[in-house]
Structures are given as C-alpha cells and as structure tokens.
Image 1 (cartoon, rainbow, N blue to C red):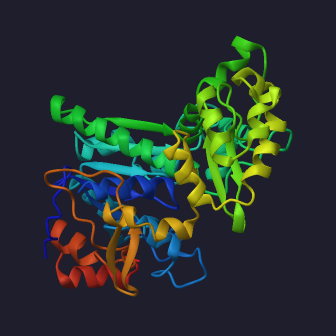
Image 2: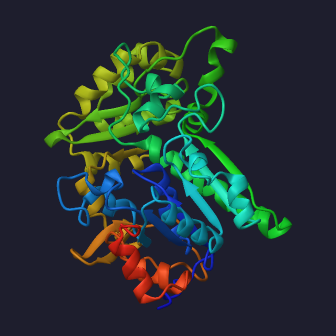
Length: 402
C-alpha cells in the first residue's frame, strides 16, 4: 500500500539511511520533518545501538524513539550477497543515501559513490565519519564526546581554573546531523539546477571545530591560548548565572553602566552601586570574581521568576534558568507546536520535540513515532521493489530479510 502524502517541501524525496546511533539518524529526522520519506535499513542481528539503550525491548527504547519519528524501517541483512543486491535495488529507487557506518564498510560492500552512480547517475550520497573519508586518520571511528574533544570544543567548556568539563548532552551528534541535513538540502538544489548528483564527505571533527569560532585562531592574534572561563564575557559584566531561592538560578547579562545601575536599584543593593570597584564596565571586568560573589549574595534569597520579570521591566536582560521539567510544561512551547504528539504502536500517543521551524504553506505532517523493527518491509519490498508475498516470505525464512 502506498504511504499517505505528508506534504512538506521535501515531499517526493526518498532517502535511504544506513545510519546508527545519533548523528546519521538525527539528519534523517530533520529531513523527515521536512516531508522526505526516510527509509532506515536495519537488521535484527546488527541492531542500531539506540534500540538497546534504556534497558527495554528494541521497539520501545526511549533514545531510539526520541530520534526516529516519521522514519520507515526495513529489515535487510547486508552481510549476504542477496541482501546487498536488494539494497542496490533500493538505491535505484532513492534520491539520497546517508551512511555513518564504520569507515570502509560501504566500499568493501561495493557501495562507494562510483558504484552508486552506476545504479542511479544522479544519486546524492552523504557519508559521515569522524575524520572524513580520506586522509591518514580516516580509518578511525568514535562517538560524540570524541568529536567534541578532538575538535577543541571540550577544552573551552568548564569553569575558570578547573579541568575541562564538556557537556552531558551529545551536542556532537546533533550538530553533525544538522550539518549533514543542510549539506543534503544544498545537494538537492544542485541536482535540481544541474541534473547532477553529489558526493558529500562530512567530517564530524571538522564540523565541531567550526563551532569553536574565532577562538580557534586566538593565539595567532593575541598570543594567549583560549581556556575554559565559565560564563565570563570580554565585554559584559556581570554576565553569568546566579543562585536564587529554592535552588533556582537566574541568568543576567549587563552590557552598559545604566543597566548596572538599574540592576542594583531593582535589587535594592545601594552598596553594590556605590562600590568603586564596580562603578564602570572596565572596573567590573577587572573585579569580576568579587562582582559575581557579591551579586550571588544579593540574588540568593530572591524568587528567580519574579526577579527576572522585575529586571526585564527595568531594562536589564535577565531570565530564570529553565529546567527540563519547566520546558516540558511550558505553555508557550506547546502553543507554538515546539512539541508535537505522535502515535506509537507500543506507547500510544506521546510527546516529541518537533521541528523548530514553522512553514506556511504546506508544512510536513509529523504524527508518527519511531518505527517497529521491519515495520515497513511490505512497503519497501512489495510496493517499491515489486516482490511477491511468496518471495518476501522466502527472503525472511532464509534471513536475508533479517
């Protein structure tokens, strides 16, 4: 049976995803949220690790469900010659192939770009590897913390004078996945205007290095090697997160002296306002550690939300630091459809983080949760490849469809 048209700017684009864990699947999710049909190739004997994270069965793993909305799942044993033949037939029905499997695996399976072009001349292939697909380190593989550490980003995240801490979210994966989706959109535009496909060699480490920004070359300009410095800002003080009552925190950023005076007045902190160490921005920058300590003492007994409202009303940029629970119950995000409700076979209706864009007209529908393993075998093998029910049953019995 044909799948229903979900609409969206990428409606009619089919993406074959040989992807695992997070970076590749995250790219697939973004493209699916734009309306593309994304078919994830899987195998019961070579599962995506995300189907196992969380200690539950392979169709209910929370991490897998969080990344694979509106994705189709087809089972295929790529370690068999017959399975690879079927995969090549899928390539012939696709516009884009994404892979983030081990370095060299596509080439060993005769699925390199030149082989794929012989199947479909205008195919677009995007390959995500830690160091890219060539060079002396191209054989190495790693996870998101590896990307962040090797890129130089981890060394810049942490409090001043302490060891680098990085972050406890896999921003390496999501950043690489978003970059991959952007590159695929550009390649689709190129194909639309020239008729040519493209090969996209994406290095996860290089993607993360691009996020480091100007500090990457700071030493050549200033002679100082950038280090982690917490919330310090070279042109704002105070600039940071300060404790409030009941374990809450408030983020405050002051750029000019009138904002500093308004902050002190709102807090009723005449002593701070009169302190010559904090009178001007250069003074506050020079004495920022003492400033942060004094401001923390002044905010510690305050209600974070109430204080943030009063400060903004006085012209001071300030916001209560939101927890995950705060965000999940945020009426504004629900009203904006920042969250969507999708339907899963096992869990019924559940919320997901939706696309961060709003498109008018013709946004893609995002209604379906993550797929069961092999949920779309019939669609891929019978509808797209034209196999009979008996042929599909035979492939399953011989574990080619595994």
